[in-house]
Image 1 (tube, rainbow, N blue to C red):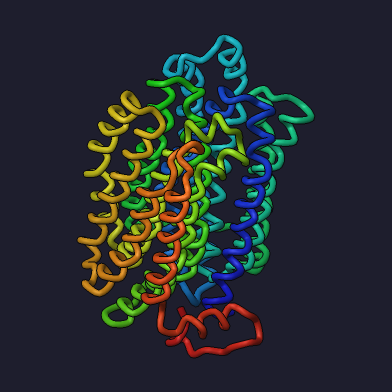
Image 2: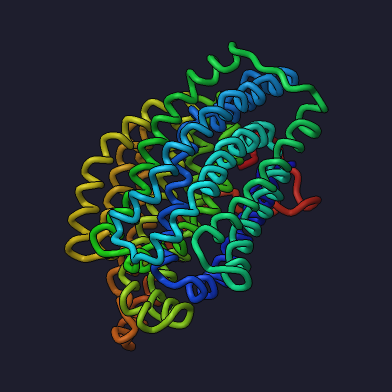
Length: 489
């Protein structure tokens, strides 16, 4: 399957999450209320923190399976089961420690009501299970990425998305809206996905080979995965800090004003991450002109999404008004517009993150995140104290800008690529500045200015498009176009 069709398959599976999120978030928010929604949002964001204790086994498996173990199925099987043997005890211990203390800590930090505090007592067991499942499932995804099994990955991502969104909503509507019940529903989804992933890895990928553990394989993967894990650890802690600090400073109800816009904009990462997960195995081992050509084409392709970001910034007020409520729109529009710009920057930054990892330079990614973390946390505290959700969103924007600058320096961004990025960001900045920042700010002048920003963005992205965009698009359609490996995205 060509790279273009791999990307199309991967993207199709991930886009399902956006549809479900858009359809079910108002129902979910109404069923459990803003306070529970804020608490669950913080808890689930922190649950990914446990995956950092996997010592980067998922990315390490992708790196080695697509590289030196590419033609050795027995060695791939041995690497996978060795990673699972390391992940199981580490993931369990980390989950018990983190989630054993989490309910008490959140209750004190976020000043939760007595009723919510009572519900939090039953959250420990499902949280431990969720954390362990996340850790173990990342190993299967690492192998599938390395094996270019993107159809398998897309199918499982779709099922994962459906179950983790749908089961909690159904539980809240028809069974109970207590936090422990919602988390048990999420745990059920995670267990189903994990067991299915293990079965597919063993039977389909490794041709029924029996599990075998090798200390040599563990040491090999730790050399690469250790730096990935350190970077992910810092990144996850810092990424979770926004909602935690906002809830601590402003109360749990304020989190919804930030987390819902963040969830909307973060879905935009579906396309770049779907593309980069396909490109990463090709970047491993690429050097010189071939690497630069692949990166430049990827940047230009991702920038084709810019008009969508400009449009979201322009229609933020009516979008939130009709999707959630007028009062919510008046309070959260600024957050959505700022986060739209922040996530655009994050999409570009992710390209250089993957490039550094493909070069085996995961250490650089760790150092960049480490340096940015301290000023980001300080900005979160000040922003939450002065401006609430909008202040936290602005801190997130500055953080992503600093990450892009740092990764661009280490990756030695080319002048031509920088020019292309600058051309496309100008209409987006204009869109954020001129768009109405609440429903009452919508005038003929502001609407016309926002429409102009969208038009300018369309012109910019088409001007800087990949030269072989038509061939790339045709390559996503089975049976329509065949390309040589050098012509593929």
